[in-house]
Image (cartoon, rainbow over all chains, first blue to last red; front, side, top):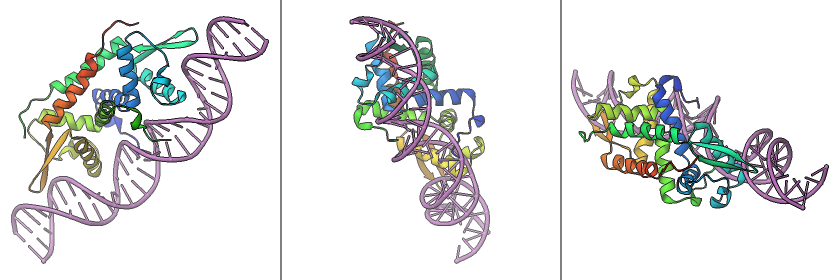
Length: 107
Length: 107
DNA sequence: TCGTTATATCGTAATATTGCAATATACAGA
DNA sequence: TCTGTATATTGCAATATTACGATATAACGA
């Protein structure tokens, strides 16, 4: 009770769910969009950009990093985060292959 | 504490997060994939397909319906669920516009 | 070394999600 | 009307997520 029964589902289904979880919070969407726009790697001036506290941002970054969407490199005092190109492509394919499956034959 | 601060983010960011939440559970991914494959609208034989209890499936279907991804029509005793074409297209665009934003200039 | 700056981690409170037994509802056929 | 079948709702326990104050860590410059 309360635990997702991952063993019932395929690896693909679980991976998609995991990735979707990364997108499942507006703060993380905002972080991703900010990184996409900034293009060049930027660090946690996100704290000023979004209205959330520093520990909260840090936690969201950690989750995004855990899923592999972003990567961070230490740049002296600060940390430079950016989109992980390989994982991003992987994720894009994961979603696209789902969207592709749809044929409008029904209803 | 514990509440997502939706007011800090744009409508687009919140909508994307909401939709992503629908995909953020393997059972819901499995339901969507099943509907995509079956193509023709099917009902809750999902209970046998997935290994989850009937109330659990019903709950997931309710969430998917609330987000608009699927629609159900009463078919006598059973309910016929299927992908909502318009919403599906909308969601596809929502994700694609995010994926499009990426230019590999960084790292 | 000391202070400053940038991040990360810990601990915890509030809230949300997941799963299911029990129960309710709603339809169809006898 | 009664019975079975299909689905929904309720209530609750277990767990996960979100947010942040307090505190730790780590690098730099004076």
